[in-house]
Length: 205
Image (cartoon, rainbow, N blue to C red; front, side, top):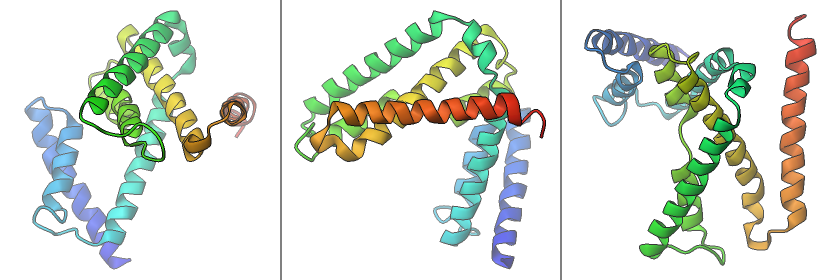
C-alpha cells in the first residue's frame, strides 16, 4: 500500500509538472501525461516499476477519464446534429474497414479459418480513442460546438460498433445470425437500462 501511494504521488507530481510545461508551450495536456508516465515508468528512469501499481494506476486513470467523458457528453446535443453523424460515422467505419482489409490482405495476413489477424487489425484501425479525443476537445473548449458534437456522435457510434464486434468475436469460427441478433439485443437492453436510470433514477439520487 505504501508503495502504491508513493507511485501515485510520483505520477501526479510528474503529470502536473509536465502539464504546466505543455500548457505554457500550447501543447496538448494528454501528450504531457503520456510523456510523464513513460519518463518515470519501467522504460524510463524506473521510479515506478511495480506491475501491481501500474495496473491500479492505469485502471484509476481510465475510470476518472470515463467519468469525465460521461459528464461532458450530452446525447441530446449530439442527436441535434442530425443524420450528419450517421453519414460521417458510417463513411468513416466502412472506409476504414475497407482500407484495412485491402492493406492487411496485401501483406498476407489471414482473414479466416481461425486466424483472424487481419480482421482484428482492420477493426482496430477503423476505431478511434474516445478518451484521447474527448480530452483534446475539452482542453480546446470545442465539445459544445457543432464539429465537436459531430465528432462525439461518431465516437459514440464507433463504441457501439466495437461493443457489437466484441460480443460476436468469440464465435467468429461459427458465426450465426442468431448470435448477431442476440448481441444487438443485449446492447439495446444495456443502452435502454442506462437511459432509464439516467432519466428516472439518477436525478433523484
